[in-house]
Image (tube, rainbow, N blue to C red; front, side, top):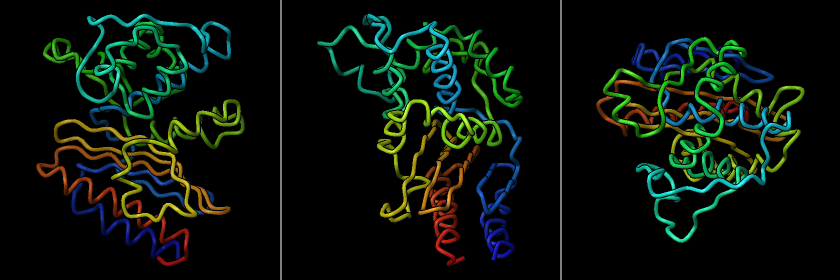
Length: 261
């Protein structure tokens, strides 16, 4: 059955060549396709930011209750809700972390990058040997983008981040169970979970998208079966085609879990 599963995945992704990068890492399977190919990260870069922030909290260098004042100068466009809430100025670190993942809030992300320091986040990335990942600019910073600065990652690195969050022996989810809700109640569910019946499957995912870029990564649980699935796409002229491919990969994992390859 596992061979047929891999063959069907190959049939899905092979026609797109280096436009697609996939890792499926589970107890019963390990599939990779262009897993170290670097692509623009979009919002997937928020995962190493999350991990570094929690490391600083565990070390006592940062507090969940610490309040950060956000002025109008800090507000950026794109995903998020802070930009439309004009009567709230002070935000806790815990709430900013939740917003960064749950609604992919770009303003929350940028404020956290200021607090943590981009250079320190990159040092954490290097220390964890995420060799395909670099963070060079804030969200929606078009001036930095014009200077050639951008954020990159690869499916192998993002899968490792998800392992640190959900499935390693000392996972973030084990130490801070509330973090599950950041992902389980994720507002963007149209990609890997898009063709999966939610009950009894639990899907903890984080998406990323920008022009000609569409990504999703998820920790998927069905009874005693578990897998981390990361799918990244770049260079698709039709974003719907990219999203449909990611949906089909998620569906294929679901069928494998149900022994319906």
